[in-house]
Image 1 (spheres, rainbow, N blue to C red):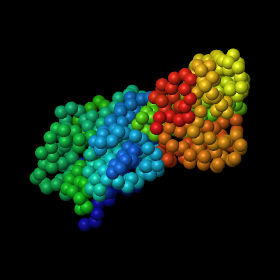
Image 2: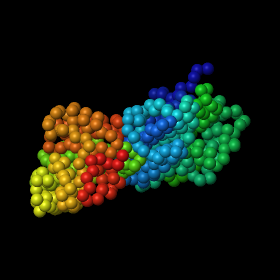
Image 3: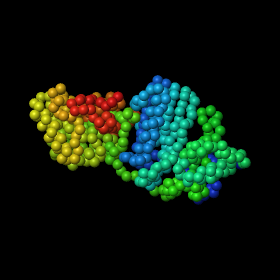
Image 4: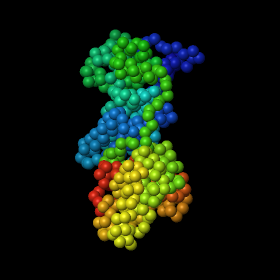
Length: 485
């Protein structure tokens, strides 16, 4: 007997005229869809990682750009999971860098597992559906202790980003219809030899176990796919998963309104489209993920517009320390920085050395710049970067704002070339770093993509300076060179 060809996500066996199977079927050759960034644009990668003696935690997930109910729910879920893993090991959660292979990467990219150092917790994700405003994200939670591995959870979460409605795979089915769905799954297992012809493989499942099973449902245009765990694999590292594909038309009577809506959008096949969000609009918790800040001094200049475009393309938040006289010349550029969600700081009116000015002139430098920023943007700058980093006790007492300097100086003002700027920014940074650059040099602008990519490769999430402090900067007169570590 020849082997039955594997069907794809559409249910086609690869013939020139595809036919949709009429019954449920089990297929070990089936591969769940894994959609890349081009098929799910606007999804933002997240990484929380920590290493401690005999413990490693790497948690990856993806959220839609900007503030969404789906993103908030996933962020809360994985914050609890990561911190809970550390607490169970008897250590506080402390995010780190250079832990997870591939760093932050793109949304739900396929990364190798970290090498276990005793106990490890890994969360990986797959984008399995993306159409219209609907996205489906499969999350796999795996715990390892030495060489033994135990999957803790496999769940697909669905969201309609336009309406804010979210639910796991079990919510696709009408309450009370779960047993009817299980009968269809059992039919597929029996028909393809994965269960005895007279048995009910789900007879002993408790309601909670039924929910767990159906939560791992992947919706395709033609089928609903459930990964059914059967007997242990030969290496003993877990149970064998058998994909069971149930034609969507057989499930129509058993779908919830949410499930019917999700399938309708996925079957329609419209390109995934969600509202564009400003570059710095993504919520960031720097107590959960390892953060660093890129900052730009002396603008806005004729180069700042190009920089704004790059930061939007890379979804990279930044903090800009603006000179008042340049804000007065280019108020529209300062306003665009605010529209993109970037943070604005005060860098004096015309860049004097504050320690060499009398008190009234220091106050004038700060107040004139505050007024120019407010007039151009409606925003009040909440921190000051002293030119040249030059500050003393007297100046700290006069300016009336927290003072933010840096711990990583790219020396980009010497025009060392884009590669050198990126190498310094990436190589010298650690959790909490504040990186000094200037939007007055073309080489700096050219280096920005490599800076952003390189920091993320190391596992750092970009955040504004205020975000590093949870939105509450240190008090007026205090000088900081980095965020919490």
